[in-house]
Image 1 (tube, rainbow, N blue to C red):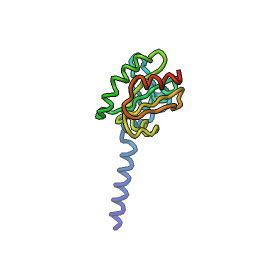
Image 2: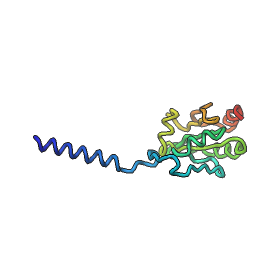
Image 3: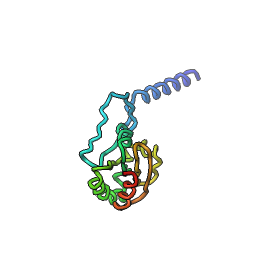
Image 4: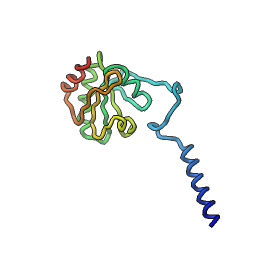
Length: 147
């Protein structure tokens, strides 16, 4: 009986240690402030966001974020609309995208349950959201409310 308890404790300890040292997925890695370069390359829109640059991006002013996934057919229909929109509003708004498969933490934080989901932020505050495919003129009108 004593050997079974000791074996169980050793197995538990080994699993615990593995969980502590096992590398996390990129979306789960936590780095100390200043230990990485937050890069927002605004030369190519839509801007691809991740767990490290998302907060910086939405605090930058007026930002539309497209939550999407590669397997999502409606997202592929929305994609050229978003690309066209990003060109049209590039002087006064940022258009960005988040792949929910790579960064589920961001989608979960904002309650994204279906995609495509389009969220509009103004200086860090969520001011509007759309679910499903949206036409460019609807999105421009929504963005112009905060221009």
